[in-house]
Image 1 (cartoon, rainbow, N blue to C red):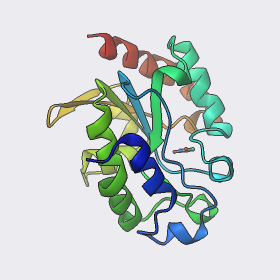
Image 2 (cartoon, rainbow, N blue to C red; image 1 turned 180 degrees about the vertical axis):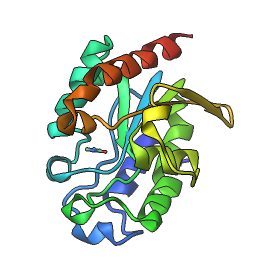
Image 3 (spheres, rainbow, N blue to C red; image 1 turned 135 degrees about the horizontal axis):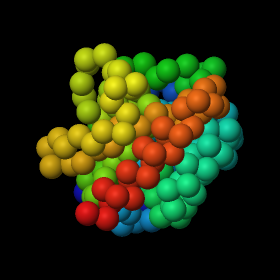
Image 4 (cartoon, helix red, strand yellow; image 1 turned 90 degrees about the horizontal axis):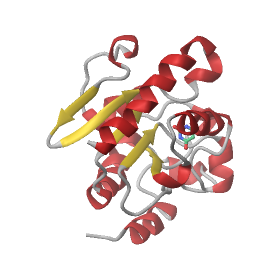
Amino acid sequence: MDSLPVLAEKTRVCQLCPLGKTRMHAVPGEGPDNPTIMLIGEAPGRNEDEQGRPFVGAAGKKLEELLTHAGLTRGNVFITSVVKCRPPENRVPTNEEAITCKTNYLEKQIQILQPEIIGLMGRTAIQHVLGDDTPIDLERMHGKTIEKKGKKYLILYHPAAMIYNQSLKERMQDDFRELTKKGDE
Ligand code: URA
């Protein structure tokens, strides 16, 4: 199996889906190499595409706030997304893009990192990582832990949700705190 840096290098030059033609920089993800906690979002946005780093724009600010509130920092968690390249106009990744990226990169990252808990931030991450086509009711599911094939997942709203809906803030803070509780078990 490839090491994490080799996988990241392959991601940076990847042309397995059409997003390889329009991206500026692929965003493999970043964090410690044996994290307790891994966080997975949807796909890079404009700032991430420019810098090649995950969650460095407006959603990243919210993510950092949520981590701080939970007693964590970016340095304690591995942060990535289902899709490593920015979809044009920040559209939702297609199934083909998500599945290609997941099987070639995300699943391998999870296998290498072996985190104790994986936070799935938003619908794209939940749908593609859990591989479940049933409609996702975040109102009902957020904050819940799911065990699947020996892995532990925590269902989270995407940090960007807080930009549009301030009333989610407390719920999201509570949910993010679950990462540390479950990670310490
Ligand atoms: N949103 C995501 O899902 N991932 C990023 O890297 C940035 C914003």
